[in-house]
Image 1 (tube, rainbow, N blue to C red):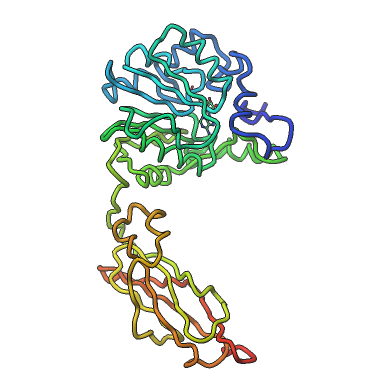
Image 2: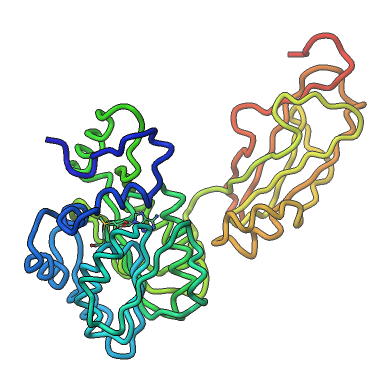
Length: 365
Ligand SMILES: C[S@@+](CC[C@H](N)C(=O)[O-])C[C@H]1O[C@@H](n2cnc3c(N)ncnc32)[C@H](O)[C@@H]1O
């Protein structure tokens, strides 16, 4: 029998959104129990919401670990039918749940009837969740949600959680650990179902990869537990992305223009970027270094992509001019060498980056 998360909606997979997939999975309360943990009774469900189980922590672990109390404002991303929120709410100041599924939220509303500090929010698109101002929560978590999201969406949720947390706020996230044999088995099983990918698909991350995403957005990972199928991260919000420690690796970067094998003529600008404690950049044409390489803020797209490398990333561009009239027509090899402050050097142009100087018939070797 296929695990429940492989069940499909009719229609083309492209038409299925996160919302419609999860709405379909939660038409009745019994379906919603099954889609969030297992076929079960309300009593058993409440017990798992409090104690947790093999799959996920419960309210008890969150309260104990992070010392939450009557003044704490808490947010769950992908709250389902408030399995955990139903148990947390009586013990904290406010519990907010956001979810893409209106059906899940209506079961959550019924389950939390009488709890005046529960707020449920239907979201129809990706973050930001504009209903919340910056720094409005003491604790944000998402459990058994990220393994159903495309990685870009998972990353966007992490970034949003960081925005919404107060300074030094606490966070918890989990996803499936791709290095665990059971998860490999489940993931391979998902390949066999054919005709496209179900929206509630299986996504998984390696522990180091999950840590990277968390640190990129600005979490200090206090504990990364990868001993079981799940990789679980217990975190604190830092003011910004985790600074990069020296990883012992040489610099990295890119020669952006001219493109590999581009035909050029006249005066040409060679431009790119190099990062990670870069002390020197050399641009060589047919092994001859160009006399001058400028460094500066030439590539504004780099810093937002590598926030952990700020402030270096803000001025990591390099630029050199090449007068191609001094070269013979045909093919010439460009190499860019970047060296860091410990003397570690790398070639940014890999195995080959050529330009073709216009004006000749064939290509020189
Ligand atoms: C397996 S259930 C887990 C529910 C709850 N976290 C729990 O532990 O009981 C996954 C939940 O994530 C929600 N979800 C799926 N994609 C989402 C997205 N892109 N944004 C927010 N919620 C999402 C689903 O609607 C569903 O309620």
